Image (cartoon, rainbow, N blue to C red; front, top):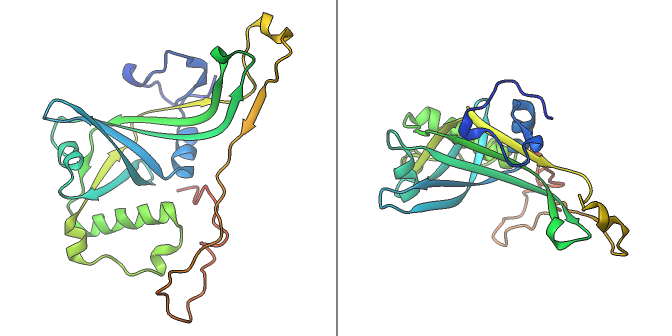
Length: 226
């Protein structure tokens, strides 16, 4: 069993394979900090659900999500009384069992449920967007042009507090039925990892700029200890 700092709410409590659940912030934060793409879902006011992939960034106890101010998901998510569900998944291996029934995946995931609020103050919005960029490419905000006021106003930034959050982790070997261990069928784990190639310069890049250290070599997790 993973350590728990506080008991989660009923809706955030894992019942299926409960032994894989983790409710402590170090585990949750480490997964959020290593990934940078999430999926956010909500029930629209038109009566159907929507799930959208988004980039995000974490700052302490808040996750920042950004998108167009005209986005249907963002306009719906900022409404009073509306809750969203954000999920993040990292795949670490393919678990090849002796039976197809027990085929599995080694993974680390986080599910976060809550009400997001729109960040309207331009200074806070700039800070949140900086955090999102730094989450993906730490060090970039010191080099790149900062967003203009027009760009800030055309972007919607949502702040989602990390309150109702659950991590779920699967590690290890296949869990086959006892009788299947006698089968002469290969079983094991195919490790999965993400590899980042060397940076490719923009064809319109003028002579002079060199590849920054934060882009070569690029590794995840990008940052820790926020």
